[in-house]
Image (tube, rainbow, N blue to C red; front, side, top):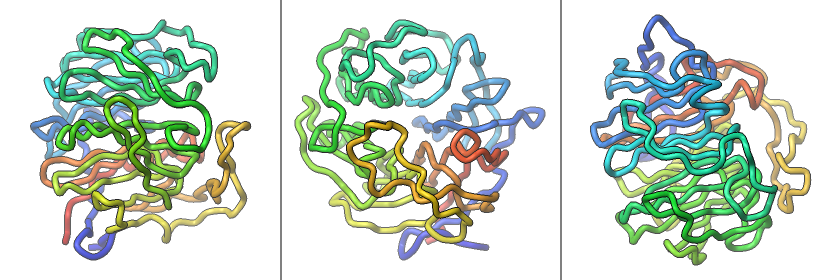
Length: 328
C-alpha cells in the first residue's frame, strides 16, 4: 500500500473511511474536529446535515443543522473542553456554541450583518475559534478583519489584536487559531497569505513564527507534541515544537498549471509566494487539491478536510475529507 510522508512520520490513507447514511454527499468539507472519545465532527456544505458525527471506525452517529437556516456558509468547527461544539459561519458573520446534539447555546455577532471591513470590530467573515483552559475563547476574524478577538465564556468581548499587514502580530487572512492548553495557553494562528504560523501569549503578545509554509490554513497539535499544518497549496506539513520540518507530502504527484493565482485580497501586502497553480484533475487517494482544515485523534491519525469545489472547481466526493493512519 502507498505510504505518505517520510522518516518516522509516514501514513497510509483509509480511503472511503466515512460511512454516510444513504450515501449523503459531503459536497465539500470546510473543517473537521475530534472530541475526547475520538468521535469525528465533519463540517460540510452538502445538502443534508452540515454537522455529521462519526465514531473512530467511520460509523455514522448523528447529524444536525440545516444549510440556509442554521448555517449560511459553514467554515469551522471546534470541540470545547466540556464537549460543546463551536462553529464559525463566514456567510452570516457569527460564531456559535452548540451542544453535541445540536441545541444552540450562544450566538456572538449579528446574523447577516457584518462589521466594517478591517475595522477591528467583530465580525466580518470570522474563520475559526478555539477555547482556552479558563473557558475564554478566541475567534479569528480572518477574511474581512485581520484580528483575533478574545471573549469570556458568556460571549462578552474582552480585547482584540491584529491588523492587516505582514509584520509581527499582523495578519493577511488569519484562517484558524489553536490554543495549546498544555503550554500556558499559547495561541497559534495560521496566517494564510503571509505563508506562516504565528504564536502569541494569551494576552496577544507576539512570541514567534514559523515560515516556509504555502498558504497555511490550519494548525493543530498532535498527541506526539508535534504540530500539523494544512496548507491550501495542496500539501500537509508536520513540524516539531521548535518548527523543524519532520514530514511533508502533497508537493508531488498532482498535476497543476503554473499560472499565479494570487491572494484573495487585492490589497494584500504579502503576495509572494502566491499559490502557484491549481490542481487540474482528481489527484487520487492520499493527495490533495485544497486542504482547508486538519485534526489529529488520540492515536495520531490525521483527518484532512478540503474545499476543492470552491477553490479549484473539483468535487472530490468521498475524498473531501481523508483519514491517514500512522504507518511508521
